[in-house]
Image (cartoon, rainbow, N blue to C red; front, side):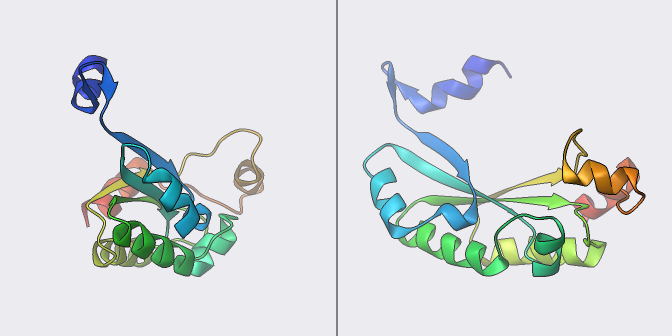
Length: 149
């Protein structure tokens, strides 16, 4: 697929006909959604990452599962399509917690989901944990197994 194949469904006669955006669950409010409704925004994707509060806290995500639930409800009530991202292998995550996150994402009404494995990025607190041996990232086989479930 080329860039143009991916972009053309969103453009009509040189005009943008659809915008998709991603944001944090705790950045969504009725006021924000009212503003977005004035533009051709069709899909709002939330970086939920996990629906387990222990995982979110250990990972320093800065939001809770309740933030994701509330934002999801507001997005759907406002008439937008909902996308939810989940990240497997975060600190404190387990296979069971990831599967529960996936089930909750379906229950929240997401029409699409992106599943990302954690990547340790240089200069981040996660790199420090990794170097100290306090965090071990998923290996490819583990990421495939969890995603498959």
